[in-house]
Length: 346
Image (cartoon, rainbow, N blue to C red; front, top):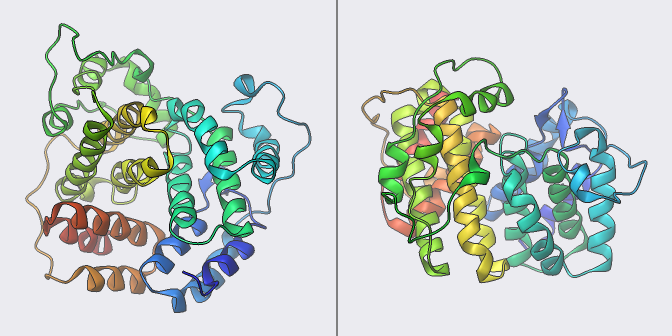
């Protein structure tokens, strides 16, 4: 990505806000990072030409963030949060800022239907894998600011018991995800749906069922498995909510991508938060009974992403990007099918 296309795209996008039409997430920075990552630089500016028109202007800050705890989750202060992180990242190394704020933001992983953490994951990948440019620093600042402004916990996640000696049955990722209950009323927007989780009797026991990671290596393996399983679940449940169930895959993918930039002591709580996000999106959008996995024409990873790039929808692009990561880690060809399936549904 040294040809500057991504930086040019960021420059165009950084005049726009993190949301539009009230609260819809600006997917531009995430999509262009994925397109560039997979060698489709020639599509980036043309894609942006068609996307930028729907976006709002960048909100301006009015008052400094003094008490960050009380300002978390205050969407009215989005401009203040963006200005705060712009200043933080001008004054401190980006890994230092990320390391300070990751544990503060992680409990609010549901922010913006998980788009806060997803955007941070894309920004970190751009910084980790290439030169640290001013535009990429600005992108991390805007991603962190968006997460802070929309900070929202998953109901019950604050009561998770991260004690491997606790006297309760503890299960692995596959079994835990299979045991996630569904809310009865799957109507309305994501914020309304998440609010119903607290009234589901089996929700908190199911959330607490996952075996806690005892080491950083276990946390990394758990996240890899979580992304893998969520990708396969898209084949069974994606038809019910093709767009929103993408985030059950892309949220843990973003956390997994961020691990190398974090202190290893943060890896276990990162798995716990990612698990809560995927479980929540599954509970509020997936049906109880899935369907038989569809048949999609086999293709190489490069062909799968090329199809997603031609499709052009930001969710299709992002799911293909996540699926390729998971396929590289596991070798499971079904993950490539999931990426193709999203292109059929969306």
